[in-house]
Length: 279
Image (cartoon, rainbow, N blue to C red; front, side, top):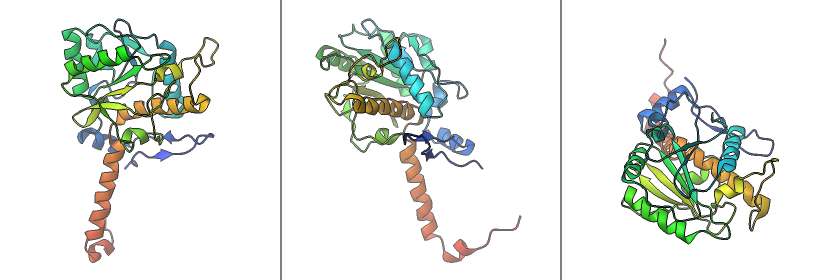
């Protein structure tokens, strides 16, 4: 039987890389409902592709998405395409993408009823939407108010701050805060649907920290923490992808291991010491 997925630390800079999922562990995750994003939002054999929601007024984040995909490919074993897709929220193709991105700094116009219905269905069946406030000097109040209003049309519940110990902050890297090109707020907000956070909202211009110039260098200064903060933003971007694909796997796995240890501890001593049955 294949071994369950583990984290191994092989990167020359000390960054962890994800080991392969064993076949049995993958099947268990799907059957237990731990991995609905992969099970329902696209063929499991296909490479993951990030998708940007094409809505009026959305930011141009093509360079940031390229960097995002490249870093996922370099730092993890996730098979991911090198470029992001662009999809309208009412397009049936929406359901091909487990991870959606919506960034902006201006108030977007209201979504159509068809777009609201499609997002509700996709996010209810395992999809994840990352919303990024890309305001330059500070988080855009206009974008913030508009997206909160639109989300209430999709799901009648408010965004909630994620506690520091939430599994997303350790889905790949261990983080204690959420930053981007800015660090106005160290919080991530989320909206839970079923057993996963279907919507994640950062107010710190995550895409800005990932945007590159045509010659390859990063295009925008990161404030106030400089390149150290940029690395933390890159790690957050990796964690977001890993959470969207694996959801609460790390928490569920810990729970299973606790149950197995507990079962072992209460097993009669004679049974624990008994030799294996002959084949």
